[in-house]
Length: 317
Image 1: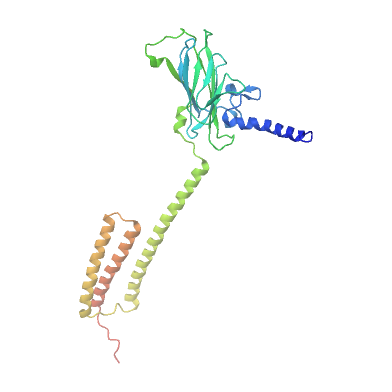
Image 2: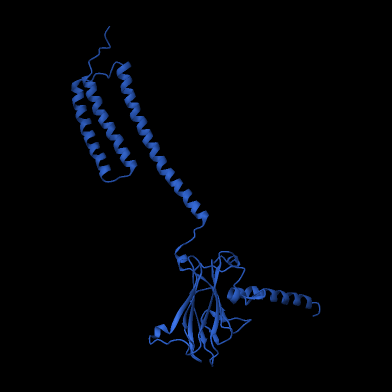
């Protein structure tokens, strides 16, 4: 038994060290060094400073409490990207705070409550003092986390200090909806402005450049190829007339039926090209229809030119 004692002590000591670490996900620590977290926040999140990007709200707060009355408080966090987090609320033990679902009393200070799991929109119950003790002060700290499981600058928090007046010190309106209020701290405008990751912005820009290069690259390639083909045909016609003696002669008995066939084909392909333009086809389809239409028209042109060319007797002795 004595031999096992050192091992048992080591195991017990390890468990004691691990326990606080395991308890932290269920709620924030009561103290951060010598400071109370509910009063100063936590230096391990968001660079150690409160952020107006987090809107911490508490609703159902009376303007003045009634002695012994119980009120339902709803605590919520709002952030442009971080939708869940945690909180801690304390009334300096002036009344009685009772945790609702998803909340628990703080172990080091049972008079305070915090979340028992990461979430949002917690309902807690506050019972006013049994006597008039004057104004009651509250401290509420809320932390909106980014969900990566680490304490980093992506976890942002804010602190809300508020108070409830003593009985019969404020004007009571007949409208019951004005008897309670919602108190918030933070910049609501920041909820609608999402700060994008510079890496994501650059990646999107590079993707846009790649898509643009692919689309325009194909457009420029096929358009340039079509221009080269047309230029080569025109150049061939020029050299044939200047150095080759002109186009070969085509007998009219062959030229007429050939011209008719090619004329009908050219007319049909012209209609096809007009359809591609009118129906808003892609540039690739339009370019293809244009090229085959020009090819058919060129065929008609060649038939006419060859039919009008003078006969050349190249087989004379």
